[in-house]
Image 1 (cartoon, one colour):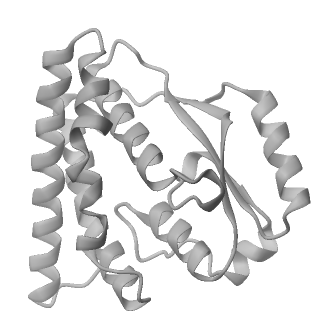
Image 2 (image 1 turned 135 degrees about the vertical axis):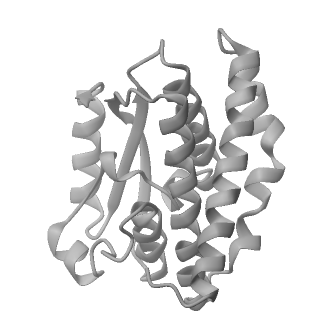
Length: 204
């Protein structure tokens, strides 16, 4: 992982000083352009950022590899929920941060280059696990009164604008579209698997 935009990190530090209790999140970029699976994962991450952080000063999702906040506020908020051993701990923390009344700002210029050399099998497994984590995330969010899984379905309904359009502009559009199909199948399967496991009495 490499810092791709030092000026953005300086800007983020300035915002933290101006708004105590602020969580600031930057942008993650793919550092392995030749790896189709890594590129597809980046497309999905970009879509999530565009959707959940449409209002950059009321952001709802940051990846844990590029976020910053004051230690004291982080600890008071409960930090990362350690029950999320598989995935979605960053998504849950960002959502809880806003629910507790704290600010979350997306600072797009604070960039980190992420290098995850994914195989097709690794790609499918990663997004299967993301689906499993999402099952727990939506349960906790519903308990807080933030809405369950159906409250975020419009993210998938906007697939043409958020995902297909960007995929068609890549060097290998057919391959990207195929990988997006794998993502949908793996993510949905992971979610359903974990929901069934929970209902049958399985632990986190």
